[in-house]
Length: 109
Image (cartoon, rainbow, N blue to C red; front, side):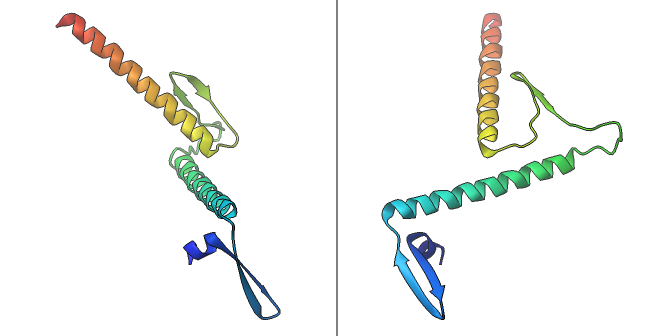
């Protein structure tokens, strides 16, 4: 059913159903839109679960932020692209730390 929905468009009017095939470009656009929608919903779900897990019941506290080597970030709305940027930054930080500690360790060997 999903595969058929990606490659054809179905319209029902007055009890008659007409299926029209999509062009390869239109099918690719439909696939891409579906993927973006799924990523957005999954990311929103992760953000909501994270917010619930880190929620505070202190009335004086109004925000929770994360601090990493690249600075403090606080956004009203997060998107999948921001997750990718943050993931890339964390991988760069991991490599930096590994290389730094490895070079110090090599000095003592």
